[in-house]
Image 1 (cartoon, rainbow, N blue to C red):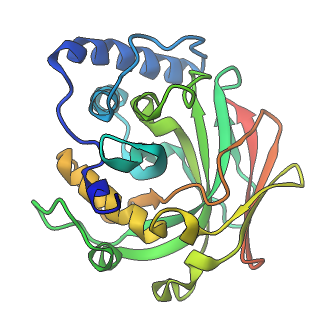
Image 2 (cartoon, rainbow, N blue to C red):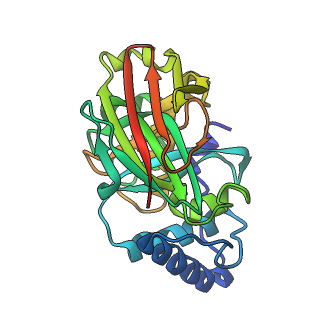
Length: 275
């Protein structure tokens, strides 16, 4: 499954779904701009990853914001030949913690969650036309790894209840990224085995290691480079890759405090506020 994962579910959405994709994207982008929930999915549920990405592509164009990175999530069980999905992280939703505890927003009547993640910074643009990458090739395109938190949120409260195509359709369920400290000596891959812990309001909610997420954080980058190339999207130096939820996807509410600890050496935290 790992090798076929490069496809990322990329493909052509059905002609029948094209008009539907436009309507769904318009509804999601409007709800996000207005900070309001969508109690029901705003259209026919996309059945394939290709249909989900068709909605995402339209929504990216409608949103018009600069993309500062990409999140990678897991598809379990695999669908359309892939075990991962991708979504954009917009630059105005990326915050560097720098010892502070930034406030990150969720849609209070929608879906909200926090995830402890390793964040990979892109150092070089992948070669034009290359759609499949080895782990070493992907690693060579990364120039830094940081600890961090992904804030997952969607106006639609059932975003994760209807399968990966629905999750993909609303920016992969991303609503922000908190960048913590840089990981020293990351090229030796030792960080993939670091114990990671996520706490909400001081209580330990989840534990894990990146090595247990398919082929790890570098594997997430390998997938993303191939998946974006298949979609005709060029990832750029300086953009971030949020490589997957190490301890799981943990629901949060307005007023919560989230703290992620990495190897008992690095901590990054954020508060949760209403969008």
